[in-house]
Image (cartoon, rainbow over all chains, first blue to last red; front, side):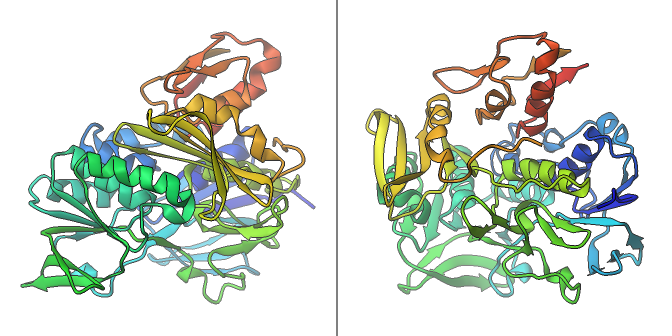
Length: 395
Length: 64
C-alpha cells in the first residue's frame, strides 16, 4: 500500500484538525487540505455549553490553535465552504461554492447536526447549540430572557440548563427520561444528578415526551408536553440529540448507516476514512460497530486515521471516555455504562458528594463513573480495559 | 524540551498522565494537572508529545 500523494480532510473541527496535525507529526510531506463548512478557524465545542455560554470566556478563547500553529502545519484551510457531494471512487469532493477538490486520500470529519422540531428554524426564541455562532446567539438572548426551557435530558441539555441557571435565570429542563442521563448513568446516579439540578433551582419536568412548541406572532411561547401541559417560555433550547452529518454523502458510494460505516481501522472505502462524531467503525475489542460523540475520541481516532493513511493499520480499540461539568460537579466516565448495569460505589460516598462507581454487566466491569473524583476515577480505568482491548496500540 | 501546563485550562481528564505518567500527575482533590518534570529526559519526549496532542483542553505546551 503506497503513501498517498495528498490528503483532503473534510471537516475543520477537532477531528479534522487533529488528523492534519497527526499526518504532519508523522512526517507526511504531501499536500494537506482541510475543508470546513464554518467560516471560523477550528474551535473547541465543549466550552460552548459552559464557559462561552456563561461569558466566563470570550468566544475567541475557544479557538483550538493560535494562527501561527495553523500556518506552521503547511496545510491549506478552505473555510466557509461546505462539502456537498463525494465521489468515493474518483476521490473527488464538490463544495457549495462550486470548488472541486481531489486527493488520493479523503477523511470524512463532518461531525453532527442537531435534531430539531419541524419548523423551529422559523420561530424566534428557539435555539440549538452546536456551533460558536449558536453559542453567541444563545448567550445574547439568555441575557434578556425571562423563562428558559431546555428540551433534552442528556449531556448537552443538562449542561446548558446548569449554565443558564448559574447565570441567574429561571430554568426548566424537560425530557422523556425519568431522570437526567438515566439511560447511560442508570437510576441511582441519574437521580443524584437530578438532585443536583433541583438543589440549584432547576425545575425538572422529566418523564414525559415533549411534543412540540407553542408560538404566537412568530415567537415561541412555550413547550408542549405529552401530558397536555404547556411550559411557558420566551427562550427554548432544543438539545434532544444529534444526527451524523452525512446527507452530503448520498450517492457517494460509501456505506452510511448512523454515520459513515468503517472497518476496524476507520477505513470507509479504498482511500476514504472517517473520524470523530461522524464515524461508525468496527471496534474490534467490543466486536460491534460504535460511534462516539465525545471530544477525546476526535483526537484519539484522528491519530489512528493518520496512521492508517500512512499504511499502518492497527485496529482502533479505544476505551471511550467523556466528561461533563455541571455546576461545580465534574463527572468523568471511562468505558461504557448502561442503565441496567450493576452499579457499585467503590470509593467516596454519594451523600458526601464525591464518589467513584463501577458498572458491571454479566460479571464484567464495563465502565467506571466518577463524581468530583477525577484522579481516583482515572486510576480505576484499568478495571475496564479488559472489556475493550487486549493491548493498547499507541500510534 | 520544556513542558508547561495551564491549570486553568485543564479539565481533569487525565489523558496526559495516561500518556506520560512520569511527567504528569493529577491533584487528589480535583484532578487538575500537576507537572512533575519541566525538562523530561529524551526517552520521555515522544510520550510527552503524545500527551500534548491528546489533551482535550490543550493545557499542555511544549517547547522543543
